[in-house]
Length: 367
Ligand SMILES: Nc1nc2c(c(=O)[nH]1)N[C@H]1C(S)=C(S)[C@@H](COP(=O)(O)O)O[C@H]1N2
Ligand SMILES: [Mo]
Image (tube, rainbow, N blue to C red; front, side, top):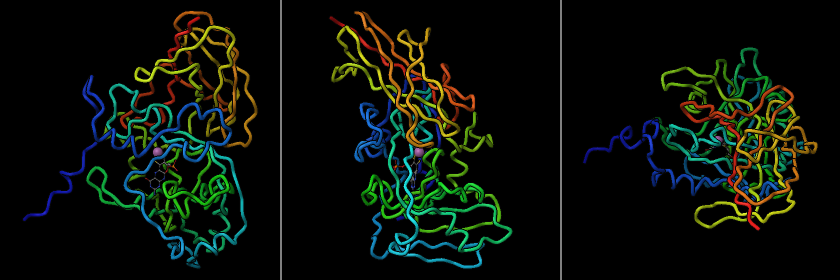
């Protein structure tokens, strides 16, 4: 028998045809990589099983008792550490909101065929570990160091390219004191699906940078151009060079008011005074404005914004609604101190990334 053609097995990057439904393969990805139910926006810290998940390939089995992290490449001193050695280093915790760069993709038209996120690819956790920078200093980077490459234990094929999941950070970003090697999530050991036994957390950046099942760190003398570095770019056409994704664009989400119809998912709310609530975040700067609309974005009112518990965590907001009977389209949008805000028209790009189009929820208010 001849060997099957891997390039033919691997689906090329494509856009859905007009009106083309979600495929079984997209549903298969969506079931593995679930979003955060929006009612979980009520919690400061997302309960672990409600945090979103995104794993390109399989969740690898990494045995903590034999686990080692190696740090090599352009360093004077190579390091190889087991989990005890990592755990005995200075411990730091940060509350960090993580969001997938593809959040909102399935609502784009035309739809880039990939993990079909609606808007719930987000969650906030208390991540505990040890800062990366002191380890890099201990290893002593050579003068020619440009990028730090992080390799995960997971392996797969994507658009015809067989690979380990790999992402890099420029040296200056890798040396930021809030970039952590994490072994605990919300005070418990990392769960397998979130990168056990050790993952990177890059606060403020879209999730793709926070490499799970981290096994190797390598310092290199040129910008790393691995598959995931070329893939996570905002481009209009497949051939374009595009702009690399880094920090999270501002977004606010609301807890859908009232209760849902099982199949249509339409919300039903009893008339009267109700508190509309949710969270808002940005990886660029503090969120400084949240506005709510009940008429699909024609008119807006300011919501009350609470201070974020930590700089890279989401902030709670509330808005009081005297809801009278009728049909409404309840929307929310956020802006941050850098002047960034959320568009009312879809920010379309070929990969469906950084799409922070405002969220609107149809609500039927009844007596
Ligand atoms: N090794 C590895 N790390 C990874 C990924 C992956 O597939 N493999 N997915 C990335 C992406 S795209 C996101 S959005 C986050 C998701 O983290 P979570 O599953 O813990 O929410 O992990 C990132 N780290
Ligand atoms: Mo992601």
